[in-house]
Image (cartoon, rainbow, N blue to C red; front, side, top):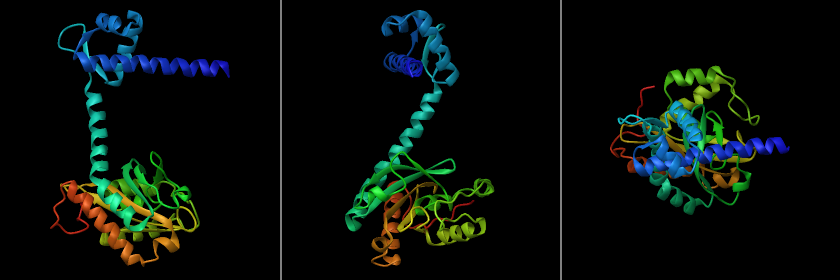
Amino acid sequence: MGKEHTAVQGSVNVLLKAGAILELLEQRSDLSAVEIAELAKEPRSTVYRLLGTLQQLGWVESAPSQGRYRLGVRLFQLGSAVARTFDVRTAAEEAMRQLHADTGETVFLLVPRGSNALCISEIGGRWVRSMAITVGTTLPLHIGAGPRALLAFQPEPFYQAYVAESLVEFTEDSLSNAADLEQNLEQIRREGVATSDGDVVPGMAAIGAPFFDHVPRLRGAISLSGPRPVVFQDGAEKVHERIIEAAKSISRRLGFESENSWPPCITR
């Protein structure tokens, strides 16, 4: 136990030292290893070793002046990805608050991450503790309303590779059959809204809709979830209208032209 703790603490210290180097390069544009060692108050050997690792990761690169370093292009790419996520969250804030105010139920904001749907924002409702997903966690793209709203608009090669893998089941109502799943996704593409009824957590239901940017390109999905009788108490059609309007509102904030057909016809 003591050795494990020491190893973990050592790894943390290395990360902290690497982070300090990145912060110095952010503040001073480009620096030599000697200057970094002096500013960071670290041995030169340690700084050289960390700079070598950071260069391999693409987080640091050699500056035009010989023997000097600057932040690498990989950090710019990572920062751009984070910025895109924050853009989506900002664009969705008002629609999420309005949907929560209208229903009192849990509202999720999801974005695609590989073969999963990642929750990046949530407004908890009365039954939030019964949910299978929270901020920072994921669901497979074929499980749940929001994830399937994302899967429906993925490129065809991605979809074929996805269904070639095992379609896991969460409950007996999960769509684990490829033919049934494709039929469901076709309906989502026609109507622009997805329904989940007990396929994630028994007794819980969800309605989700995708949203798009100016391209138009799929950017994420918004969903509403709660106990089945509560979600459908006003009728599924009424809830569908609310979710679609929320998705359209987010899309308009991302530059989607309101006169375009909904959902947009995206080449798969």
